[in-house]
Length: 161
Image (spheres, rainbow, N blue to C red):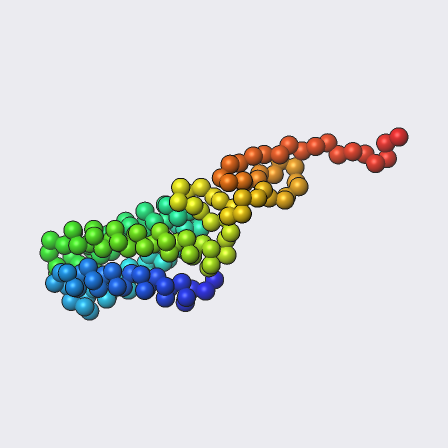
């Protein structure tokens, strides 16, 4: 997994959002918004992109990224002495989560090399619309998010007369 490239793209998403929402439109210093952005970048990557995304899919990971972003931005601003900043934290978290949705799609396709990426509805999609070629008995095949199960056929004895 290429963590450097993934973190670079995530930084290009997260840092401008916190700089614009917190520093440009509010009275948060550039240093404080950068510090909050870096903490958010690292914790959200570890919790959302490495842990939640592969196990739970895009929708759950995006919702968890929203919660993590809101808590880190709001808590970070409170710890740094800013008051009445929940709305700013909420707006920044919404924008970050919206970008994270598309970032997760890229991450699943390019970093995890998973053609069975999760679609917008949270259900797996093969991407090709073709069934698996696994001939094993009772194997599960995913075709356009519909699951079917094949029944095992009895094996024929070649020695039968």
